[in-house]
Image (cartoon, rainbow, N blue to C red; front, side, top):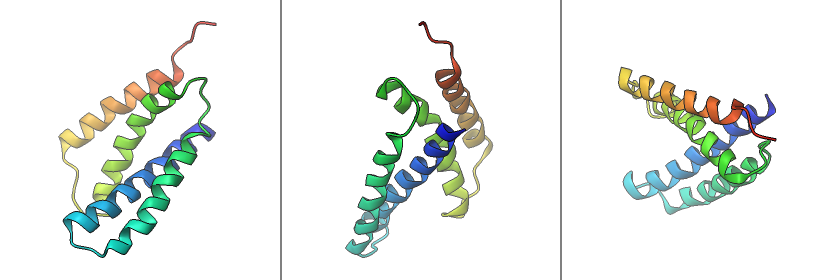
Length: 108
């Protein structure tokens, strides 16, 4: 459960940080948007260090599915765009992959 909370927090920090750059470069927002964006990206990296995993690569691979789900939520809540069925199907497939990576049996 703790791992899931760190993944969700990391995902929203990453998306918020990347969106700050998007807003600055694509939506003509102030360059000052980059300050909280950089803080959010640093928080994202820091939060991933708390994920329970023996190796970083596996933690990052599993995180990918969580990031996709969080991106779909961001799409809806922050940008007001309705995800379509292909967004939802793709996100579900990725979340299944995340579950396999996290919960799969490991050789001792």
